[in-house]
Amino acid sequence: GVFGRGGWRVCAKMFDDATEEFQSEIEALESFLLEGEKLQVGRKDDTGEITISVLVRLQGMPEPTILRVGEEEESVRHLPPLELRVVLPALYPTNVTPRFEVSCEWLSLSQLSRVCAGLDGEMEELGEGSTVLLSLVAWIQSQSVEALEISSTIQLVDEGVPPHRAPRDEDGASRDRK
Image (cartoon, one colour):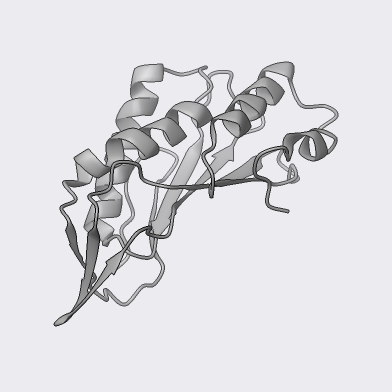
């Protein structure tokens, strides 16, 4: 299920064998989420990997924000969140780098690639063996609007792959789909 504030208590019971470090990271992430943001923690698969999905709102959007589709414009107060999916390897966080993917209905593939580049930089700064979930979510919340150079008008372009996704390979290379 999808978990927001208060959801960890239910979620923690799914991972009796989870490390204390992982449980602490999930608890910290849960308390960090803003209203309207959601956390989903999947079950371990056969390889021991866990997929975490977080819906994150970009903070600092210009107000009002104008969405333009062709010649039509619409003023909006809130835009749909960006989805961050992180696959945590079985040995996370010990000397392994998680894989991640970002998707968002209203960002272009090139913008999503810029978000991935920012998240790659954040993970590089943290270094191998570090917990990364909270830092990745914080980067999206606080730095993505500036990195994307979002102005008060957002031009929506149909690139033929809705919703737009920018997955990252295990080596961090972007695999933009066109």
